[in-house]
Length: 186
Image 1 (cartoon, rainbow, N blue to C red):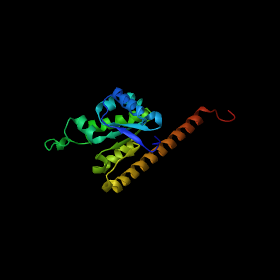
Image 2: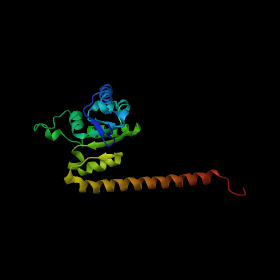
Image 3: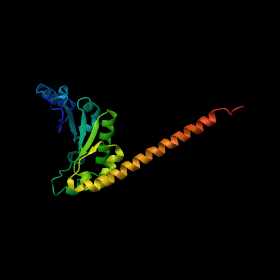
């Protein structure tokens, strides 16, 4: 079909087998991976994280849906006024789920992004995602400037940390080499 600028996103895919069925239907209609179209999956159900290695065999990438993931990890209806105070992306369990999703996607050589309110409503959350190595973050227009500043600082901190670690490793290697080499003329 010539849709080289289109990437598809499959929502709420419960199992890798269900994902394979979707891919087959897309392929049968000229829209699948066999036709050069990338097919990503929303990572918004705990099963997506627990079986991420299997999902990675089916899909080209992941997009963490933080709103649904938070709701399903915490077992709260985000639209319920009675439970609204329990809906929190900063919850330890939610952050661990997001961490596992990012690490799992990267372990499998897949890109992973996040869409949801968290980085827009809580700009520090964008820093958390950068620290984890997220590949992309969706933001609401009114939060872009503040989030960009936080992302820039987090990326600079990460870059400087890597540079310092590289320098220390290099220095340690030189010291080890100096210790293990016999002195000239000895």
